[in-house]
Length: 186
Image (tube, rainbow, N blue to C red):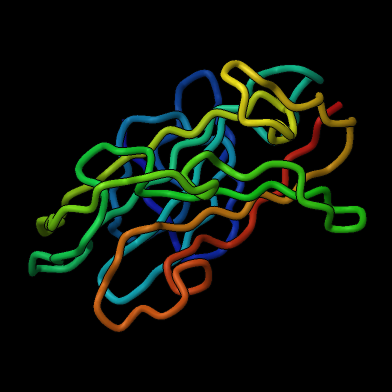
């Protein structure tokens, strides 16, 4: 199963029993992941896609996201980053829509030491970075095993972006980002 996308705007793709063959036109293939809610963005030959399984989740249900970085160009794209497959290649912020209060930031944005390495995205290469959210706020302590509190039901805005270092990029959170996605917790 392959999916294609139209433009870097929010798209809602619904799957029927027979499967989805595409969501829009265009030629940017996305790997075999069932995207029911998708948003994307672009920077030069790079395409960024954020997917999750649905728009509404039960309270306490783990929410799976996949952030993809795709080289849609014909030339390799060199970058500095944490290396292939690292969850450090993407950052995510989740905020409550009512009031815009941030409730969770992915671990890759919380600091800590990350060794950087030179890397390259080959033409057509896709890097998929899974990020799961357990509907909890970030812990207030750095204790091992510490968990934040469960968030309240409501609508949340999800912002995601690449953390790779590219020549000419001065603000990764806007230049290497997808359009925000909204999810609802019931």
